[in-house]
Length: 392
Image (cartoon, rainbow, N blue to C red; front, side, top):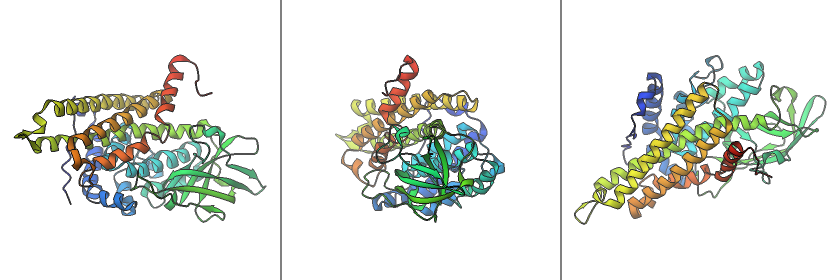
């Protein structure tokens, strides 16, 4: 088992822009990843298994709802702290960050923002501690980039709702205790419902044979005449804007997380290039490898500046959906490009599980697609700057 020698690049001294609290939060997450994730993650990825034993540690470093107020079990941190935690977790593995993102932004966030006080008190403290795990049901077999076309629906049966439909590509589904599910009522209006494991007619079959996010548990949500208590409806927001507001928070976390994956690939490639000798000198002394490495650190630095500014805007309540889309799309593409170049620097060793690069590369092929594909985010930016929608 190789030691985790990761050293985070900070070419523009961006630590100077962080508070002491930011750095303490980040360093605690970084140390935990080095100790608990790096030593085991290659084995779990090879076996296509999620390491459930890390859930408690994820909770302890603030990986579940770090910005949720302390009265509900959260850490009460700001948006930059949230981003830095996501960066460090994804430096370890995108699938582990997915588990954290889903719990934070797609389960805890809607209960906090759209739920009532009884729902907040009932679910949020247990979700923050990892005692309870959740998932988010929006994407369907026939509706991905067009979530408004969903067919999952519920009917008012007097003393309960009757839920029918299916969701696909759901992180955490196989082991989640609750699911925040988006479905249409009889008038076609989208609402959020909290569905609990054990409700009759609710099942969560696991998705197998993935080449990406192999250390993450992915599944389906199946609803066959599920009786959902009326008190499980999220009352404070409806319409497509409700789930999309959750996705804003999750996409923001991804923008930071992708930097972590890129950092790990860059750091691995830089260290290897200094140690690997060919033609009587380290390959780091050759022009082509220096070009690759110089471009990597440039792109990482640009992404760091982009997300830091976005974090400031989020803290001020001024970040727009389109700004978040730009950062998500840019940073994931950046990370993918760096993973591919880093793999080239390592040559044949780059495809082995002895190094993290190929795992990051495969994971990022999912990250570039989920929570808004690369192309959809381009169209969001295009609509924002032109005033014209190209979605229809």
